[in-house]
Length: 66
Image 1 (cartoon, one colour):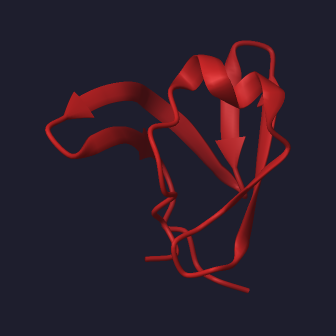
Image 2 (cartoon, one colour):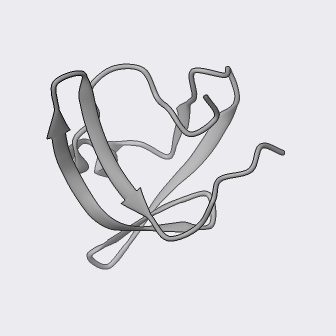
């Protein structure tokens, strides 16, 4: 659950964030550079895939807890 954040966080919402708390209770770093978004060291490659129980953002790297 390190890769899951509670609630519905859309791509437009992350510009106001510098971190997010995961369901596991740890913090991930959120950063924006140009038109891109990074979660820890992972680039968001596809955002805002809405599903029946949440929103998926595809990243290019596995997130590993510190």
